[in-house]
Length: 179
Image (tube, rainbow, N blue to C red; front, side, top):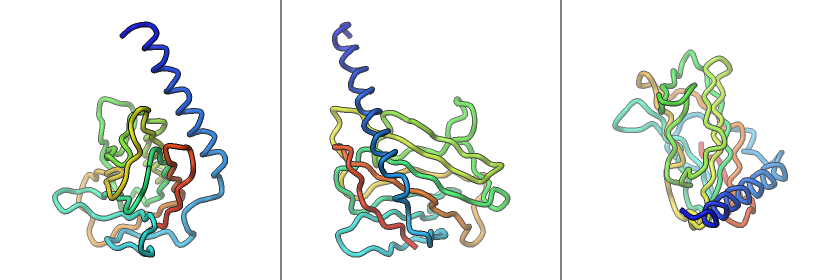
């Protein structure tokens, strides 16, 4: 890669990070509804609106975080709370320090700002963005997977404390959290 191409690539990353930071700072206080859901497979949105839902994976001990009916998704800032004594999270990337969740494809995690699971406080923080020239994500897609050490018995409680979705243009995308 030429020096000019490298500089342009790094500039695009910096501009994307700046836009994400500006949007996230500007969106503080615009969080999920106070009645955040426990684990469920259904959504409570009206037709045509973006929805976020958490479902138990069928094949393995995991919870999947899905986004539905989204247009032009480029970045996400997610914070979930859970009881670590009842929901033992397994590390998705042993090559990195700490415990992480598994990124999905909505949006593609070209740049991971934060991916942390704190087993003392029961907080998951996941902040990722795509990088230009990638187009925004549209439709339904897997945002992330929370791998578990053992399959949960019944419906484990996990709450979405904060969710911010951002478009390619740096605009917030309204989202309803499913129940």
